[in-house]
Length: 131
Image (tube, rainbow, N blue to C red; front, side, top):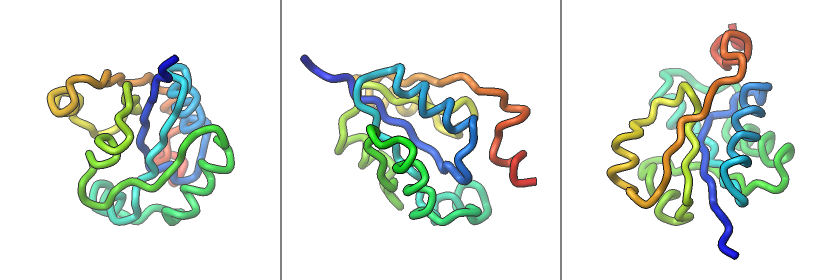
């Protein structure tokens, strides 16, 4: 039996119910979940600020709570390397992730790209929880 591999990406800066909802929704999409935690340099590059928790602490927080998931740090430059290496069948994106779904579908036509729904985004969004 072939297992369906699902990949998700995130910063996970202070694991909160919104993150937990996203991670549980990933599991509904397949059998094996691979989670890529954003590197500090990329958080700074894309969000314009340092994360509150460093990449190793964020990695450990997700690993410790989601023992059955394969959790690892993302790439610093070639963001698609992890996709090419792990060959997921499905990529689950958060409702607010700045990812070009059309470009992903064009680059990886064999991979299903799904934009997941939010869980109480007016309450559980990292930017709101930081303020």
